[in-house]
Each structure stands twice: as structure tokens, then as C-alpha cells.
Image (tube, rainbow, N blue to C red; front, side, top):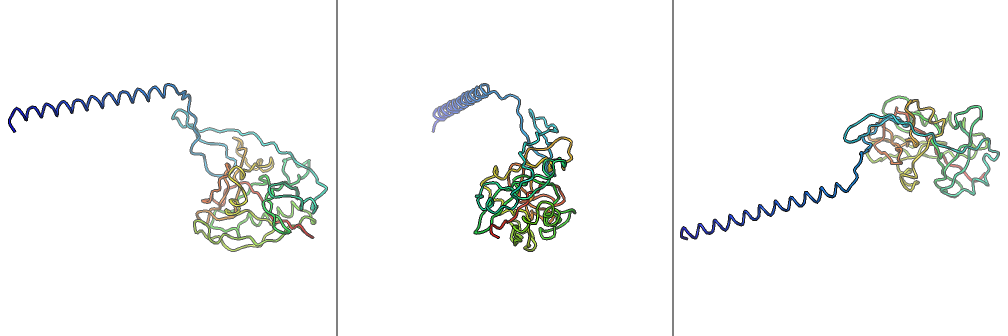
Length: 296
């Protein structure tokens, strides 16, 4: 190849390279102009993103919010939910009323302080019917009735030995139900979730009149997260002492262990089942569950 031919090839390559560079430059300019036009047509406004919510006790209304990329600690006050209470029912333990209830409906059974006004006496407890089998039905309180730790000490514990189980089957049971109702509450074998998701020791099965749902039951008996959301009664909410106020919905305990033996599972305010759990000594809402027999 002679010198003139080599020179010609170099000129052609230089022209091609120059064309490519110019083409890329034009493409990038048009792309950036188009993107800029898109964003100029969108009203971004002040961005509000709630992130990194504080963990811990239920009802905590404090959180961090990010506005225009600046993180600020905020204390918010949430409105007290409105609940229509029934006082002093005259059909306590009426089997005809109980038998007529269908899954997904509500019944009144037992009484407990709920409106946070002792002068009015105790209010009828409203229960959601979760399941019916032959001559019995499973119910859970519609509202969070109380706030308790899963256990009074921050230590490794199972449902079998926790203080909340003791409270439900003694103080709550004796306070909420009259003899006619107690005769309809079955003593049921409650599974200990021997093989929970994380392999945490669930302890032994128990025999209880009143209990908490397990992770499996919370998933099985509720259609979705929305159905699992729970509101606390005024009495329940009054047990939360945070001056910043409370959330409309509350976290509530499950009986299953969490990631470690000093954690217990719970349902978050948005209805999500937190199988990792929270420390057993923290205080969350309590939704008692029980089996009611429908025959004498």
C-alpha cells in the first residue's frame, strides 16, 4: 500500500470518527432537552415523605419526615376514634343470638371498661366472628381493649410462660365475663407454633380460655392487611402516656415468637403481620380471642 492510499484511509477514518462524535453530541443534547421539558411540565411542589418511623410502643405518634431532602423530627396528634358503645346488655350469653352470627359479623359478649369513663360502668365487648365449626365459633375483640407487655420482663419467654397469657386467663377473664358467659367459653388447646418461620422455640401447647392469635391464624382468618387493622378503645388509648397523641390504629400482639426468644410477633398499625416481632417487654394493644360453644 503506497503512501497516498494510507493517507486517504486515515482521512476517511477521521471523517467517520468526527461524524460519530457529532451525532452522539446531538443525541445527548436532544435527550437532555426532552427530559428537562418533562420535568418542567410536572408540578413537583414540596415533597413529603414519611420515612424511618420510630419503632417501639404502640400508639407512638412521633416520626421523622423528609421535606425537600431535610429530615425533621415531628410530634403529631391523631384524632381519637369514634366508637359507638352498648351499655349493660340484657342478653348476655343468649345462645339464640350467638348461633345466628355468621363469619365476618359482630356479636356482643362480656363487658369491659372501654369509654374511659368509670361513671358509666363497663361497656359491652364487641367481637368479630372469625370461624364457625359445628357447635362452636372463634371470635376476636373488634377493638384493642387494653395495653400490656407480652411479658413483664425483657427476657427469653414463650406464650406458655408469658405474663400476658396469665393476665388474659385470670384478671381479664374474671373481669369481663359473668358466670353464664364463662360457661360458654371453651377451654381450648392452643398451639405453640412449634415450627415458626425463624425456627425460634415456641414452647409447649397450652390449654386456655382466652388467648392471642398466632401468625398463621392472623394470616388465615383475615383477608388482607386492611382487615387486620385495629383501633384502640379510649380506655386502651389512655394507657398510652405519650403527650404527642396516638395513632388512629394500633399495633397488637400475636402469641407466636419473633426472630429471637425475647421477641413476640405482632400486627403493625397498617395490618402487616410482623413475624420478626418486637421486644416482649414493650407495650402494645391486646385483642383477646376465644372459642364460644353454641350448645348447652
